[in-house]
Image 1: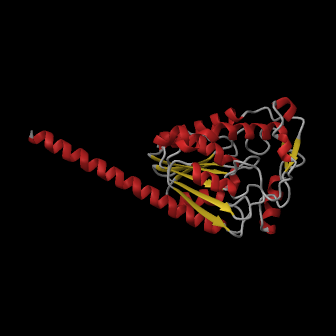
Image 2 (image 1 turned 90 degrees about the horizontal axis):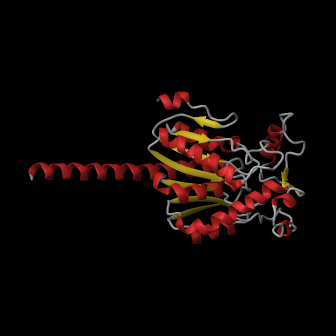
Image 3 (image 1 turned 90 degrees about the vertical axis):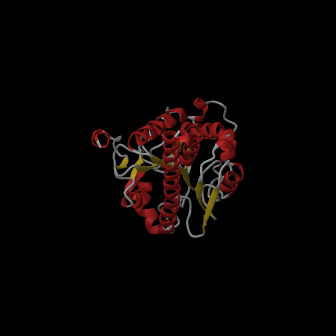
Length: 296
């Protein structure tokens, strides 16, 4: 309890203390913890500890210069996981879009300390129907300093099919004088780091043995469903896929967010029930061993 009272999450983070089971959520590139709010609050109502941290360089408006590296992003995510380890016995890792790649890397290195993985529109390749084909030319850039000369704008519909939700999200992001004038812009340096992260993580995919749930829109504007098909083939553990027919990329905000939340809760319930069964079996085995020792 003391750890929970003393812990101060970075400003702008979403942190909800709860019980000894928890979920670490990682938002998208250029997004914020607010995009995970619906999922986070539903998990909290189940009594879970939930943490979606601000990640400098990944979070919108935290690195306008584009100087942060993917290693910096991962270090922040790993630190958040370490905190969760200090207050939780069971941890599930979740990531959205580019955040899913950080979640996969964390799962590869920490899967003995986690009990499940959730990916919301994972993005190994930025290849949705709204993405200009010219972005492929950016892959020819071999150094970050050249990459920083480029600017990319997230094309409409900005990952959200529901026009009302889309307008609300855009207006919410425009609310600070400290943020870039063009909230849809991504610096080339940041995109370069993301692509470097993907290249680092791809060889690790088969090492991820955690039970995984993936949500992906059938008509994703930013990340083609082939991304999830590739993960389904390459991940080393059991993979469940939920295909969404009425959402675009930001599935935790769009029209089917209610279904995404409900399916997430059902998945979490199954993971935690399995963990409870494991603990019961271990306790029973320990008791039997002690009884045999006493009889001997």
